[in-house]
Length: 522
Image (cartoon, rainbow, N blue to C red; front, side, top):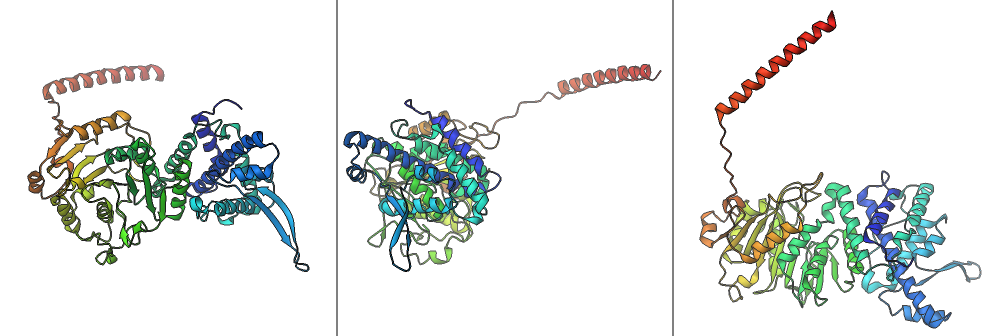
């Protein structure tokens, strides 16, 4: 093929490959197999594209070609499978092949195909430690528990490998634009989230929500951008796209090992190889640390898990980084624990934070109320933006985005800004069968309102500190944005006339039916 391959065709072909596992393996599990195979096919196609280019230049000088390939973004090594003679100690080479998808395709009918896939992935990881170390440790293509007994497992894996041999999934750079594969990866994650229901919350935030959060955070060139609950990395990628250049640094933390691996691959596919993504529990043992202190960032964005139970409240009072000095959130709800962490890792007098939260964060009392009051008294809260319900595959509850700006604190460039913008965007959305979404127009209106920071009837209100204090630091949006619509006045007499007319018409129809029945019975 010489023509460019369309994004839609790649998406459809990749999604069709999932048919191998549907009804047999849970989507939360088979997503890993599909996404890893997509990744393997992509890097194999890129490697082959470069190999062919060097071959035209250097002919059959394979040693020279491989030296050149070793200087590329990644290395696909040659694998030698050997057998040792116990008597002589000599090793015999049983098979030798490059660690590529195409080598597996040639061996797709092998009795040990699951083991061969694992071997290829192990060699790729070992040869690219700085970028891919640990990425494949949580997936086993030879697993009986996940993929069935040998005969069934081999059949499924053979079919899966053949599915990725389709012309639509030829991902050579000469045929596919740079961003297409990353887009397909995100597309598949989104589809898996839809299929996985509540389990999807571990790895996916809807695209339009990530775009809005990223825009509100406003990352700029030279910024360090962090997501302390990064999932598969969609929010970090959207934040990077807002910068407008490649001059930024990405950081993330994720507690789920499988999701962490997805994020690492996602970063690689989007050419963010240098992103530092740590596998750790952000609230109890963060790893984004420098000189025994938490790293600081220009932009901090997140969609942390809602109502996280057993998040580590018992250790928070003695937190070595003193993140919870405003108060310790309740042990059954970690929402304000994540917010506290995000505010603390934002650069003093400069850093910006945008975080997705359930509405309870806005008004719950006790410890959460005290933390909320202190943050408002510090003048850190910049905006509260209410979104529609049913935007997430994980929950149908409406959510809000809180924006904090540390340039508003004393000594910051915006210390004179003492108000909070409230936006009620909960009634504007594109209705879907299973899930609602936001349109580009909805995002544009929210961003314009945030930028102008002015009153908009039944949509936005700018509240000063005294007004919020009078409301006992309750941030429930209806307290500030009046969306009440007067009901249309009903004319009782006119309605009664309509009822009388309908009853008369119904009586006439019944009489005619009775006459017809008499005629039938004669």
